[in-house]
Image (tube, rainbow, N blue to C red; front, side):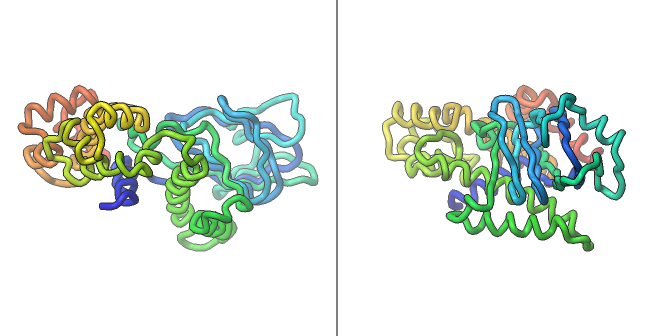
Length: 312
């Protein structure tokens, strides 16, 4: 498994899944507040015109045609054009506007702003460091993606599909949002260079990457900090400090969290029995695995599996 495979492993375990809210055609000036919503990752692609976006913890930013705004932590946000004395809620906009066939139309005037609004959701009971340390607002501008042709291509395809009224378009758009979020995480880390910490930065560290690869490829091994430090080619103390600083938690805490995340995924995605899942995830017995799982998620593994089956 290489470093990119670790990222694929993480995002599949998080069960990242994209979907669309709606397309919006907004005329004249407006100011609309979109409420916070769990930990969903929101997207706004400007297809025509321009607008401003304000997210708590970030300065107001201008968006123009082709720009994509990504709000990773389900925060509230305000989209605006012009100087409006009143900010309407999204619920009011939906009630007062014309919403049909997935398109919200609102306002009047000569100027027009067209948006594609979507989101990604994931298993919110799990929390992986890859989602930590992300800024409250990330903006992708096509003109700034020259050094990242893969991401630029995804952006172009998203724009082309957004205006294509064909069978499968919504499904393609949903998948592209998933791809773009993963690419955004990678791009933002690359753009920050050595000035950033976080899981992606840890994968770029040749020493920490060895330890992370070992954890992800041999999850059931009896890892210790000393053994992981040996693989990383560092002293135990230096490794523990560097890993904790980059990833945001000590090595054994990360190992435990990843084991439980994988176990949660295996319970929902496979028919493996409890003993096999416990063994694959590094637990010597089902009782010890069950205690750890319940402590982390509030329910035992058997109850979790039954609830997943009920919700399918």
